Amino acid sequence: MNITYYGHSCFGVEINGKHLVFDPFITPNELAKNISLSSVKADYILISHGHEDHIADAEALAKLTGAKLICSWEINVWFASRGLTNIHPMNIGGKVKFDFGSVKAVAAVHSSGMPDGTYGGSPMGFVIESSEGDFYYAGDTALTYDMKLIGDYRKIDFAFLPIGDNFTMGVDNAIIACEFIKCNKVIGMHYDTFGYIVINKEEALKKFERSGIELKLMEIGQTLTI
Ligand code: NI
Ligand code: MN
Image (cartoon, rainbow, N blue to C red; front, side, top):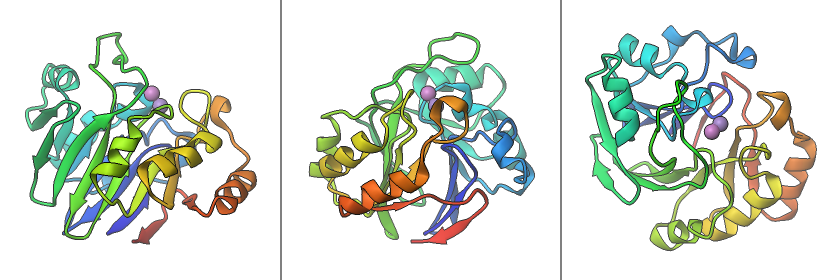
């Protein structure tokens, strides 16, 4: 599996030759100014919730690539009204097979209004299962006991977790989340993009290390193979 970081909570994950992009927020992100949207490959765009910092480039990227959007029912209605036709709506608890593997929508404790104030349904996370490995993409969420269901459900190889605090869980709660999901390999997200979520990265790395968990803080534009 190849993972490319596009900043904030946006990652490209290549699985079985298919390109998944999570929560595209690239062109408005000053830290990602070296990434051009036209260089981003996408067969699927997964959207955790309706906030601007997760969907800003979804419409443009879908139109550039023809990628299929995977999102809540309400976000599907919103994008359909803007002319997108290739959308697969889901809701929490559902699991769907695609050609790269399967997607299970799981609970996130957050909010999900669209940028124009339209209700975006419930925010979600995703558990991806594939022949190349399994992982959890948490989206924006607080620490929640529901994460124990993920730990009981499936042995995941790694997890994308928010660590920026203020709008989501921070480092200390993300470490507890790792116990709940039974995972000791984390890729951090949702930090440093705005003043509210700037973190001390050295301290974060130390805290995870002390807990026996590997934390990866990827450079924007970096690709790693897991
Ligand atoms: Ni959010
Ligand atoms: Mn966010």
